[in-house]
Image (tube, rainbow, N blue to C red; front, side):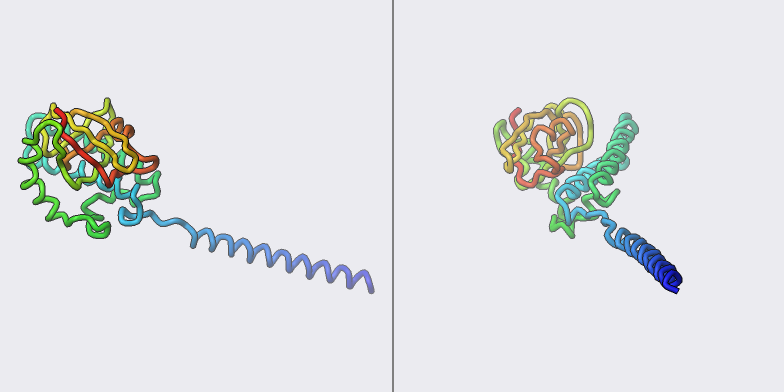
Length: 215
């Protein structure tokens, strides 16, 4: 009789343990699903905002080449499309919304509207392009990277190729002097090598930048 009771008790304990294991497994699956991280937007992360700005700059450059093409436009567009693909890889690796551009996030991030940004260069371009050597230019501009490889260089929508710009990150006092080698959608857009010289670790955007024309 005692043996039957013992066996019955063991069966009950086994059933309870089995049920608990199933319930625990189900709870674990639900917790894992509910805790899955959602991609961050540019409004939520400085890293994501920098990448979104870089993506938007390259998209605007491509739009400009398509609206006014020349003999080299096809090659330039192909190069920038490869850059955009690399920026998207960086967005995914950083936990950002893949494909988000500056145009998508300006309102949410408290940046000027696209219409305002589009009209600004028309009034700022002449003073910037004609600035004397050593003069501060592009006041209030943020600086990000183009995603392009190569020796330290910059691209600009306000300065011709050959112009030398000194870019200082006021958050860490690091600076780099680079030559403008191509056209972009912003006043000063650094390539990867130049951006590495002035960036803060883990950031893809310089909010407080001092940009000077030095040659």
